[in-house]
Image (cartoon, one colour):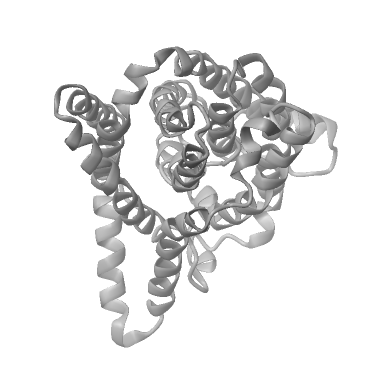
Length: 359
């Protein structure tokens, strides 16, 4: 994976794209927002295909990348799963009630986003900060599969212990067919990427699959810019119309990122002293874990949240139309956090381990 001009300047490009979308949303006729809203799922599907083309779905790709044995990453994988699917949900359980306000509906959208670890641009940001982006990339299929299985469990727990009011969310169930259809926006690109990667091992069409892979990698930043522009054009007006319901989630997103980042650094770091005779994670691996627990999977969760929002609007549940803007707000905050995090982690270098070995 090489650094293109777009990847080197992706933060500025993303923020500019969002600014363009906000301007279009606020100053153009409402029809522009409606058209953008209709185009968002298609742009998202294209982006996800480009992203999944970088993930090792195909047979044998794990052996091809750096020749690293699978056993070498067991500690990394264990921390990645523990932090993302146990520690982070517990953190969300603690933080959510403080910011809940009078709407479980927006809080549900927030929870769905922050419970899902990112599988796309987190890899690029990790690489720029000097983290082990290759190892993290190999784990993206695992992260995607686990979040599909585990997030419903945690959201059910939140409802059971009373964080979410069942009277607000009970009308979601039974889920409409559109909710399951929304998953096609994720599953079809994933299946297509898997088939293309498997086809790469067929000599007659290998050159075509290589071309598709190269195009996906080259234009992924551009596709992301288009998607962010469409999303901001579609939903920024709603944020402006109801800022009181969304602005107080901005500090939540910042506090979540701060706490998750600290936990992602401190827990693996302190464990190296607590657990003897076990190889500690390298600094590059710890950087990758920090980015994984801080960066959330807003874009993959977006079609699910969109379907749930439509269901709640059918039931005339208040503030259901603010679920998508809540996702957009998280993305805006996250990009700022990513820029700061790269600046903090990039200068860090591996510390000597001789003292640990002599203990």
